[in-house]
Amino acid sequence: MRTTIWWLALVGCGGGAEEETAAPGASTTQGFCGDVHNDVPVRVEGQVLLADGVTPAEGAIVTLDERSWTFFQVFGEATTGADGRFAIDADIIVVDGCWGSAIAYYLTAERDGIVVERGINSWLFNAVEGTGSGGGDGVAEVAIPLVLGGTTTSTTPY
Image 1 (spheres, rainbow, N blue to C red):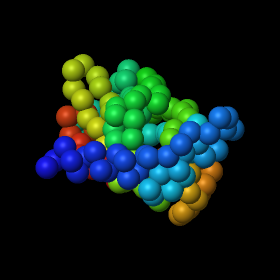
Image 2 (image 1 turned 120 degrees about the horizontal axis):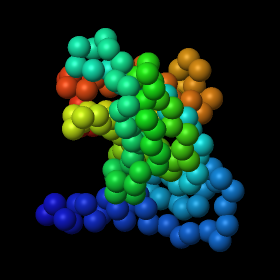
Image 3 (image 1 turned 135 degrees about the vertical axis):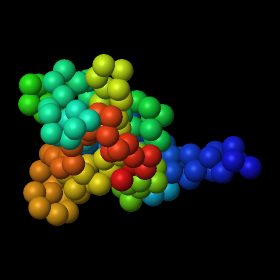
């Protein structure tokens, strides 16, 4: 039963014909939810802290990946500076009307064998779609720091 539902979800959201050529950010497929846009430019900024929630985690590796539409495709990676901050410039895939159902973006931070992850669809949605303060500028400022060894792990992409 689970396999059937998963297959139906893939066919429902992604079953469209590819276009010959497309400009960055242009629609390349028509899915169930809406058009699929490849190469939508975004900048993801944030901070990684140690378990105390105060000390910056210098040297942490931060990865931006998508876990639903592209099955764990990595879209960008950065290493935190002395202040624990990072910035990832990436060209992501956006499926109109499918934030959180057909696409699921996550940030993962790792340092010294400790890993933390957070779903960031809401920040990316704001950066791309233009809702909220500063929305639509292509910059996703992840306002809540990723805390290594803390309780910020999220299993949902929101």
